[in-house]
Image (cartoon, rainbow, N blue to C red):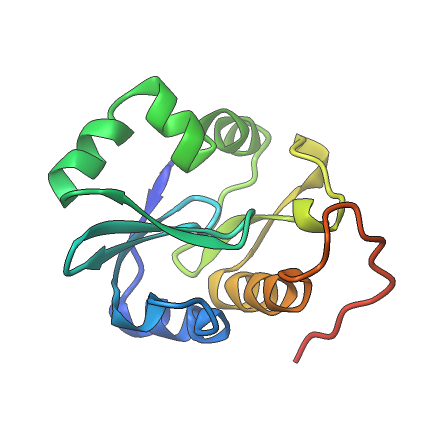
Length: 153
């Protein structure tokens, strides 16, 4: 069971292609991901977090050391790694291979729940690509807007 996933740099770059619409992402260097594919990135001014559930990129830590310190806490694991949900998925036999992550069958941004029944194992690149495309399409919608359709390339 790995709450932190380490993918080759070329795979990380490919997975982030459909997130380039986020300001500042292009100048960050991907480090590792969570079991759900959220990406931790090194920037010139600290460590950034690409939250694929919220569709947001934010500077969270001054250094990889401060990131590691926070991930060593229960609160940090819950907030940034969704540890409880990941553990439930692992215990239910959802075990990603070296090119996969846990993902939501229906993204929370589209009304999906944070429950085990809504979790599956999916290809890392495909998962991030779809999430990036969807978040780009819905980013400017007011909260509560009914979504009647999305387009995936």
